[in-house]
Image (tube, rainbow, N blue to C red; front, side):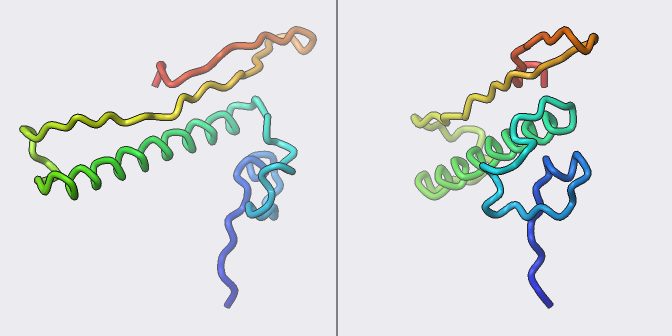
Length: 108
């Protein structure tokens, strides 16, 4: 039985369910799509990246300090550098009028 392949979620949002993810990033026709579902996918990816970085930071802290993961009194001199995520989203109520807005994670 062959291994499952990951499929491009941006293409899946638009009905193309057979696009393998590997090697597809630069060729994806929906890479800059401003629709609501694609924007939601990009936010999820950025949040997953932040969560991975925080989890890795916590594991490193436990390993270096040899303290409990839930020790409230443990202090650290290190800071976590989180990726900044901004994406220009095009919204329109009229087909001829396009208004660009910057969307950030401040509203989450």
